[in-house]
Length: 115
Image (cartoon, rainbow, N blue to C red):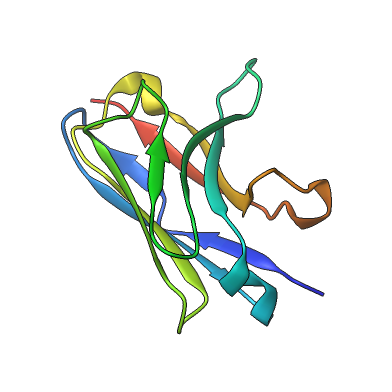
């Protein structure tokens, strides 16, 4: 059974930075595309960044140039470096496979961007 555990969220001022981590149990992590998703209050959960096992990344237009996704296959961990944060980035952030698999949603980590 694969489990995904997110961490690293918090309260940050506009323009600040945070680094999220997602630790995965199980070797299935290493062969799959992984993604960071977010869900703001009253909105659908959306994919903001994804990365292949080889390290190729894609980003939503709303975060391109500000967020960087990376992964360490040896540690079964995927990261999301978030810079130049904006209030509209406020959401609960989750990691999951791409395409998403409802069986693997974790608790997520809250990111709040506010002055």
